[in-house]
Length: 91
Ligand code: SF4
Ligand code: SF4
Image 1 (tube, protein in one colour):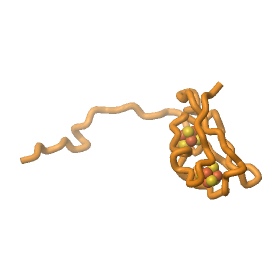
Image 2 (tube, rainbow, N blue to C red):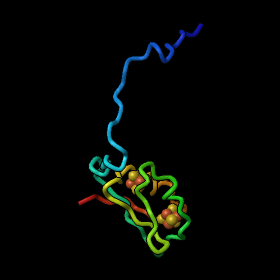
Image 3 (cartoon, helix red, strand yellow):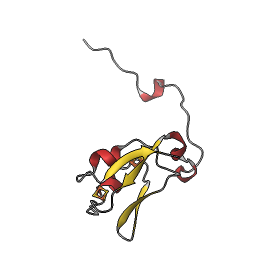
Image 4 (cartoon, rainbow, N blue to C red):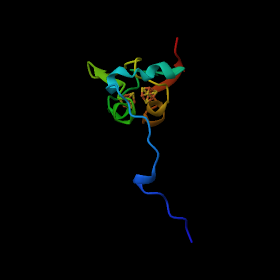
């Protein structure tokens, strides 16, 4: 028999962000950033859609990262179908 889980009324209070997401610079967390090989890039935009921080935009059709929000997770590099992204150290 499985143990019943508590309902939402029994859960303890948690923290609630008080700033809009644009004021949380998640880029401070990371040690790496994506480096784009524009020769390989097919401009498919998948990196933009997979980025959990919305840090990848497109300038003149090519990806560009906003380092204020890139937390260095590497998801974009993992998902790029043509391996046009490699993670390098920030700095
Ligand atoms: S996922 Fe890769 S190929 Fe697609 S736009 Fe991003 S860098 Fe370019
Ligand atoms: S490393 Fe993570 S946070 Fe940074 S651009 Fe790629 S997917 Fe977004």
